[in-house]
Image (tube, rainbow, N blue to C red):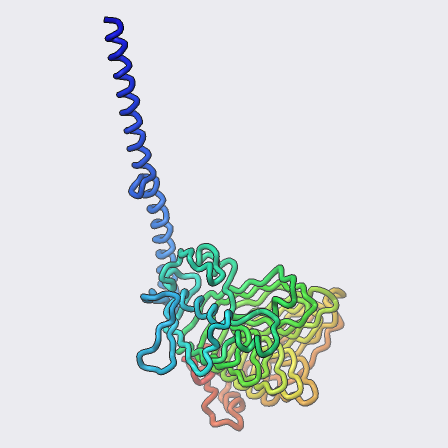
Length: 451
């Protein structure tokens, strides 16, 4: 009897253990399987976060509408993200329909796969790097092949956008083959919240500067870039160019009917810093800039040229029918101007004005700082004509900062009058400038393409 009871007890124990193991397995599956509690909780957390982000974006859209700002972002529709769609109506034209497309396009140029010579790349709609609406999948992690190893949206908003074109110092022929040669048509659309961050650069052969585009051999037109943020920390004793839209424009390249706004901050050794372009030997036409610029010189040896349109205009360069607003806080040894830092032999600036504010603090560490309300200096052979600046737009503390009054001073009242528009259109067909009757530019003249 005792042996029978023990046998029954042992069988019962084994059965109990088996049942417990089965229950444990069921519990683990319930917790961790594809439909498990933990998996569902994680998905619910992600969905809640995404919903909260979308809600914040919708509230921001509503706030913009209430404030009269027409920057509501549409949700992208892109069946093949990362692959530019061919236009069905325009020959040799490719459409960017999402952030993924823009990233792939940039890599296609930088890698040397395509210069887009004799082709047009058109921005199909306004895009916002900070909005999930501008991505097919904002949380995708499969774009390592383009240099984004991790969450795409997070990297673009933290580490920043990788420019269109090579940043390496290559011989001209090789460099040309890895930069843009086509037409980039913004089609009146805007790119919001572009972030570019360049720091810890140690090899001068691997870095020539930065901007959304690097060297623009082609044409960029009808494009807006708003609320951009460019941060630089470049401790290299080699000339570099930095800007929001394009690092530089070689001869033959142009930028037309574009505008930029945002900030350029940081430090550098030597180079050209511009709101739109770092340095140009090409054309900048009918554009404006609303940029705040705060550049610190790395050492007393540094020479930096700063301007809210371009750092410098060089041989063959033409800057015409432009204006600038914004604030400049130079802490460098070099040349600073509200529109350009310097105009070199063969460069020309015409029919332009600035109402920017320049605040300079001269100290022994600042070095030899030179300021110009419009442009700091014009080298022999350079031309600055029919150009104007708002009076008293330079504020200086300390001593030893030379000021060059290149251009013609105007009062605020003068600049907001009809006669000033006529002056800006001088020796032109009169179609470039018009009066700001709807007060979209605080009453100052606007370009004819502006709404």
